Length: 74
Image (cartoon, rainbow, N blue to C red; front, side, top):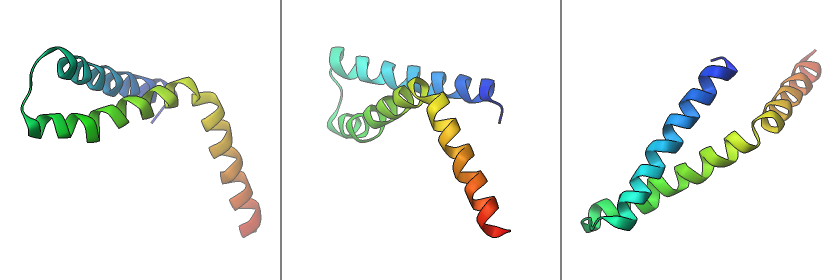
């Protein structure tokens, strides 16, 4: 997956989770859906937000971990 595709997927998940949270705040929903929003949508919103914010740093970290593993195998 290219970086551009990854950003598109992250944005889509982030927007979908944000819409669920906005609906949770402004529209009365049943208890099962409330639990799903709290346990799935809100953490997904936070995770994708942090991932988009820190994407270059995360990418560098993963790249250096991959290099270190390759060096230790040789």
